Each structure stands twice: as structure tokens, then as C-alpha cells.
Amino acid sequence: MENLIQLVNRLQRACTALGDHGEESALPTLWDALPSIAVVGGQSSGKSSVLESIVGKDFLPRGSGIVTRRPLVLQLHRLDEGREYAEFGHLPRKRFTDFAAVRKEIADETDRETGRSKHISSVPIYLSIYSPNVVNLTLIDLPGLTKVAVEGQSDTIVTDIENMVRSYIEKPNCIILAVSPANQDLATSDAIKVSREVDPKGERTFGVLTKIDLMDKGTDAVEILEGRAYKLQFPWIGVINRSQQDINKHVDMIAARRREREYFAQTPEYKHLAHRMGSEHLGKILSKHLESVIKSRIPGLQSLINKTIIELESELSRLGKPIATDAGGKLYMIMEICRAFDGIFKEHLDGVRPGGDKIYNVFDNQLPAALKRLQFDKHLAMENVRKLITEADGYQPHLIAPEQGYRRLIETALITIKGPAEAAVDAVHGILKELVQKSMSETVELKQYPSLRVEVGNAAVESLDRLKEESKKATLQLVEMECSYLTVDFFRKLPQDVEKGGNPTHSIFDRYNDSYLRRIGSTVLSYVNMVCASLRNSIPKSIVYCQVREAKRSLLDHFFTELGKKEGRQLGTLLDEDPAIMQRRISLAKRLELYRNAQAEIDSVAWSK
Picture (spheres, one colour):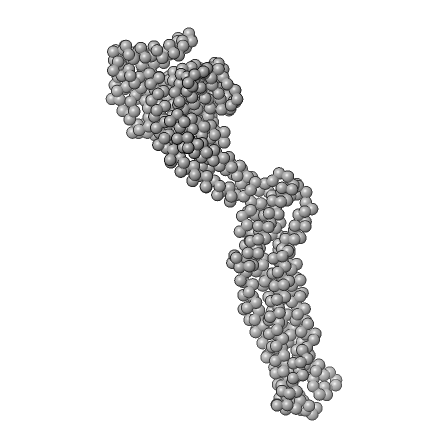
């Protein structure tokens, strides 16, 4: 069982070292989950003397006003033998065997945190005392409650101290050691008042009554000690502290404890209570109770630690890795983030993530619909055919077939396909830009660095713009190829078809009649529809080859080239993470270290059993 108190001692030390003091914070706190004993009392209650009696040493600063201005976490370790000594958490390798020096170091360390003013601080001081004359026990000595501020103190000192005390004792895992003087009315006791507020049923409060030997003649504290004046779940314990004269004369603690035992054993009013009175009994009962509380809390503590580790790891993963310090590390980090973005972009195109199907929709619906809207039959209406053939003939009409008229009709029809072709290129470009934005928002690492996000976005869009121009050029060339060279075989078949419907070599006087012109329009429409069907298949191929394929292959190639030319400082400007996120990551990492250490400590105790 002794291991349990030592376990909590180690965890409390780790909490302080890693910034967990149990205060309100956006971070999970382990301190609040650890069982502890907080010593509460007014400035004149004899609280310090009680602690010194339990320890058996003079080690606490004394004086008027508020002497304890920071919580003192006092960890007692029982030695089987050897010389007693003390160690501070902030001086881990220094042993104090002179307890007067311990007193001075407590005062000096308090001043280091609060200055030489009379202000208070919630950051605790850790003091471990190793001695054959103590029990294994941890106590937290809190600043004494006061009713008025004295010169040099803040006007809010009274509420500041009360709030600090309450912040410790309101925790359900805190055992309250309420120290009250017997020579004052218990109803006015600061310790009882504040402990009653947070523990109205007295289920975790131990009452300690001091200065019993200083009560007026004819009065006694039996009603309080028997629990009739103010009932608590645990019996009241009376102690006899050394008087100021004893302190001035440096009366030995061992002698003071012996005299305390004699007082309760020999005073008629307290004889029947002597077996559960005195500072020695107080230390033993507190040690035993603390052990039992710790034992009951271990399963819940393990569950809390495991759950919190998962939560901290998850948030740290979401925040991403910390920024590298050297140029090579920064470059590698940027490249890794860009690769992650590029990978997500490819997943959208390949169908692993949604969005790439929109490109197919352009080819399967938008492009065919746009081609259909061209309405070549209206373009090849009889009057337009007559006009274009006549214009193509010029001053000398055609002799056999109006070849130039055919060409002009075909070219003017095919040239209109450029519009849908360009629209398809633009539509795919828009989709690719949309997928870039979507991929950026889905790349968690990019959210950390606004400047890098902007640069990557700009580089990707510039690359897409360049690919769009190349794709548009290639796609329009397909249309121009069809305009520049007609498929001869199509027209070689015409005479055979014409023989079935008439001879095209009409006289010069009837070659512009309606039947002839209708036949030309029909032939040109058949040819244009054939070319249109061919382009409907080849335009998507061109777009995919020039835009989609290249975007997958080389979206950030130019950015990577420029990135390699940058120096460490320039790379650093790209990794301009929000300072709040940086601080949050540092804090989370420290807190995660704390919880992992706690997990290891608890597991080691569990295995040792």
C-alpha cells in the first residue's frame, strides 16, 4: 500500500513539472483526478504547528500576516533507518539536512514566484521529507484564510486566498483537513465555514482541534471532539502544539510529542479519548485513509488516463507535426505536405474521392448537347446553300460540281464546332480548379500554414491555366484539321448514290434549282454529321491527354522547381503557422507526456502487486 502514496507523489511532481496545477485550463488536468489532503485553517489556527508536529521538525516559515503564499505540497517518506533529509522539487539533486535551511528555501522560492510583495501564487512548491519518524503521507499546505487585508496586500487578498483554497477543496478527490483553534467559537472557524460549503455532509473532512490546552479554565472541548458540537463522518482529532516559548527555546519535537501524549492521558476530560488524540495518531489515520482512497480511485484513474491519451493523440494528429528548424527539414516538410495534397487531388480524379465523375459528365452530356444545339440543318437551309455556292463560284460558275461551294459550306459548318470544343475545355478546367480547392480543404496539413496554402493553390491554378491553353490549342487543331482536309472517300461514293436519284451534271440553267441545292445541302449535312461524330470522340481524348493526364502527372512540378531555389528563411515564411496552434501543440505534447508517464507509473504499481 505504501507504493500507492508514492505513486501519487510522483504523479503530482510530474503534473507540476509539465504545467498542470489543477487550474482552469483548455487542457485536460490530471492533478484534479489525484487524491490529496489539503490543510485548511485561519492564520491563527495553529495550522503550521500541526504540520510540523506530524513531520517532527521545525521547517515552515513563521511570522506575522500571510506567511504561506504558495501551496506547499509536502510529501513524507518513511525510512526504515538513516539520517532524515529534505529535497525540493525545484532542486532535485540537493539534499537538505539542516531544516532551518529548508525554511529559508521555502521563503526564497516563494519570493522567486511572487516577488518580495505579499501577493499569493497558485503554483505549488514541492517538498519531500525522508525520515524514520514520519508516516507515508502527502499534505498540501494552503495559505491561511484571513478576514482583512493588511498593509502591502491587495484589496482582494481575502477573496483571492479563499478562492485558491476553494479551488483545491471543492474537488471531489480532495480530503479536507480543517484546522480550528479550540479557544475560539467553532461557529466562527474559517476552516469549518469553507469546508462546509464544499462538503456539507462532512464526508471527506477531518476536523483537527488545536490549542486545547489554552482554553479558559472551566471549559473543555469534549463536545467537539466527541462530534456532538459539529458532526463529521470521521472523528475529530485534538492536538497540542508547542507554545511560542517552546519554539523560542527550541524544544525538541520528540519531547513535544511525549508531552502531548501525557496531556491527553492525564487530563480527566480527555482520558477516554486519548487513544485517538495527538499528532502521531493524526498522521497515521490520514496515511491509512489516503491509501484507501487512492486504492479505490486507481481503476477510474486508469480509465481517465487511457481515454485522455487517446483524445490528446487525436488532437495532436489533427494539428499536425511541428515545424522543422533547419532548411532541409523545412523543404522536406513542405514537399510532404504538397505530396499529400497531390495525392488527394489524384484520388478525386481516379474516383477514390468524389468529383472526377463531373469530367465524364462534360464529355457524355455537355459536349454532345452543345454539338446538337449547333443545328447544322438550319445552317444548310436552301437559301444559305444557294448564297454560299453562288459566292464561291465568283464570276465563273462551276462546270460540273460546285467543289468550292462544298468546301465553303463544310468549313463554315465545321468552324462552329470550335465553340462547343472550347466550352468543353473550359468546363473541364473549371472542374479541375474546383477539385484543387476541394483537395486543399481536405489536406489537413495545409490548414496549418496559410501562406503555403495560398502558394500551393496559386501554383496549382497557374499550372491548370497553362494546361488549359495547351489543351484548347490542341482541341481546336482537331477542328481545323477537319476543315483543312476533307475525307475524299465520302465524296467518291456520291456519284453512285446520285445515279439512283439523278445526274448531277445538269445544264447550266438548272443547276441552281431547288432540287439540286437540296441535294447539296443534304450531302454537306451528312458529311458534317460524320465529322461531328468523329470529333465528339476525339475532343474528349485531346482534353484528357492535355489537361487531366498532365494535371495528374505534373500539377506542382513548376512549384517544386522554384521551391528548390528558396533559402531557409524563405521556406520559413511558407510555414507561417498560427502562433496559437504552435503553443497549443506544445501544451498538448507536454500534457500527453504527463499522461503517458502517469500510465507507466500506474502500470508499474499494478504489475508489482
